[in-house]
Amino acid sequence: MPTAWVTVGTAAAVVIVAAGCARPCPIPAAPVATDSSVPGQSPPQAPPAPATLPPPTAPVTLPRVTAPASLPYPARELFADPVTVARAWMAQWCATDYREQRRWNVQRAAAFQTSAAAAADLAAGDTPDDLARAREQRRSRWCDEVSAVTIPSPRTSPTAVVVVVTAIRTEVVSGVASSAPVRSARRVVRDGAGRWLVDVAVAR
Image (cartoon, rainbow, N blue to C red; front, side, top):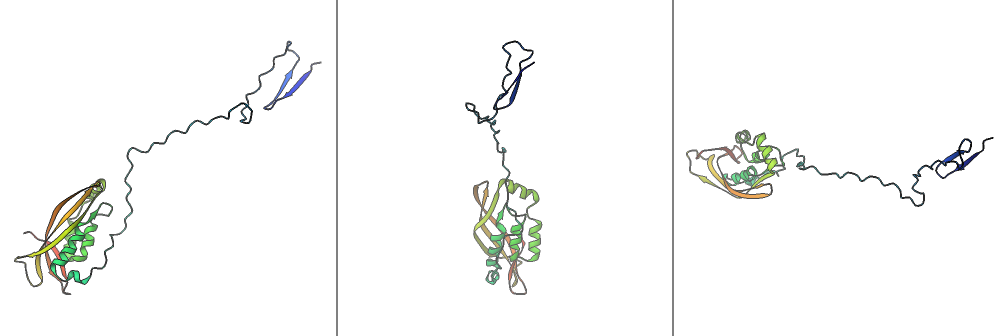
């Protein structure tokens, strides 16, 4: 009658049937242990993760801007004479920043202007393409050494004069600064409340 031996290994039970085989009977190979706790064997190593490379050019992230930069309510003294109001207007009109929305410098300067002058400056302001180039170049501008002087003109009257406003405008493009003079000739008028306001540009 055939005799069977049962050998229980650490990884699996191996049944050896003696009947029908020559002596000595072949012993099936034991299965390869995959348990990392088996002495003398190292735990399997996971393949290294592929390296993550940054994109070749990181996009410029601009802060979300939802309103023009705040401008304190102008003191009445700024409207007391044509020269003072023209200088205050130039300081706002001259300053632009690529992180702002289009023509916001004009909107800030409008606090010192007539409505007709503000509308004309808005119509002549930067185009969408101008803003796109400014953002691509990271371009900002501001003015220093702002001065203004009234000049003789046939348009001069008790409620209107012509003022020439000049300044040194600094422009920063991709971190590189340069400066150049800027100039504007403006009609400045006095309204019914006695305030002087910058009006439309005039040719000299």
